[in-house]
Image (cartoon, rainbow, N blue to C red; front, top):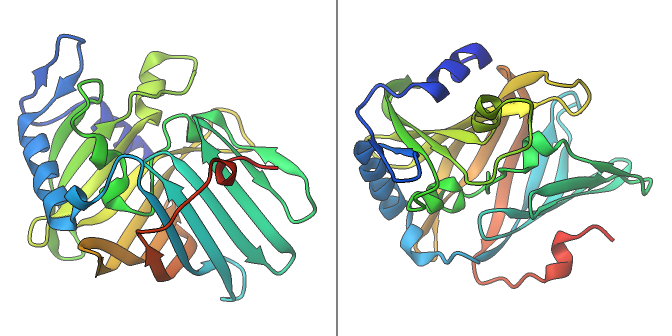
Length: 260
C-alpha cells in the first residue's frame, strides 16, 4: 500500500502527458478514457446526478471484538451522506452535506468533522457515484499515474480532484486534500481500491492515508456495487462493511442530511 508521503508525491506529479484547460486545470486524455470505460462497466449511465440510494448492512469496527453493528447508509448524489450505526452504546449518526459534516453520538452530543475531510467529500460507498461520476467537469483535475499491482492483478491508478477544496494554509495542501486515487482493475474495469489523505480529527495538520478496498461486486438494477468494503488507515484496518441490501429506487428527504 502507498504510504502518506508517497501519496503526496503521486498527487502532485502525473507520469503521463496531460492537457491543460483554459482555467489551468490539468486533464489527462488517457485518464479520462479509463474512467469512461470504468463507469460504463459499473453501470454509471444508469445513475443520475441526484440519485438517492439506501444501503443496509453491518460494520465491524477494529477493536470491537469482531462484533458486527447494524448500519443504514443513505446517500444522495455524489456528496450527501447519512450513516446510522447502531453501536453497543446506542445510535451514532453521521451526516455530510454541502461541504460540512458532523457526528451525533449516542449521548446526544454533536461533534463537527474536520473541514479538511468533508469539504471535498464524494461518495465513498458507491464507486460509480464517487468523484468518478464527475470526471467530465472542466474544473476537476484528472491524471493517469500508471499501472500498479493490486493483489496480483494490474490496475490503472487515476487521480481525480474535486472543485470543492477545504480552506487550508496553502493551495497545494488544499489540492492534495481534495484529490482521490482510484485503482481500476484492467480486466474488470471495476474500482478495487480508493485512496485519499485523511486529516486527524484531533491533531491539527496531521495526515494519514485512508484506503478503501472493494470486493464482492454485485449487479443491482444494472449497476455494479461492491458489497464488501474494508477501510484502512495507514495500513491498519479501521472497519469492515458488509452490505446486505442496496436500493437504487429509494427516496431521501432534505432532512436526512441535517442533524436535528
